[in-house]
Length: 118
Length: 109
Image (tube, rainbow over all chains, first blue to last red):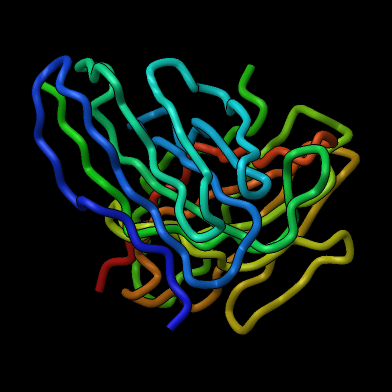
């Protein structure tokens, strides 16, 4: 079954304690991205990756890191989480990235990770 | 002004009603348009693409008005299962996806 998986699905942590949210897709997609969703603000892109070893900042990259060492995985790293990073996070992938950094193909989203930073 | 704007709702309608959502975008060079559906803070899923000529998929009709810079989604004969948040998505000339805040629909018996 084609899917995007994220782990953990729920996480409560404390300020400053490094954490990683994993994302994996089994569709051989080149393009992957991370979003956060907050009430009244919609989905905002954090980082995206056009392919292995290629990553770029989205709209709200501050406080986050990513890596793309393998095509299927795109982990999101919070080196020192803060309460304003409490949010619902989605990983997404698609198959036809444009060289300009976007794409027109369907994005497949992971199930989401609900993060609370105390 | 936000690049993509939607009325957040909620829209509360009875079963069988016809409901329409609009979404406006500010960048006239935007290239592609979509409607996604999101249930109860689950992941968004593509509902339909929006083409210049308009397109229909069963009870759902999507239209694009480039002159006025808005897209619309019409749901006919609404079902309880249509209750969800509908996200407008615009791809700008740089190829970046911009999401609207979403419009919440609640269909009541």
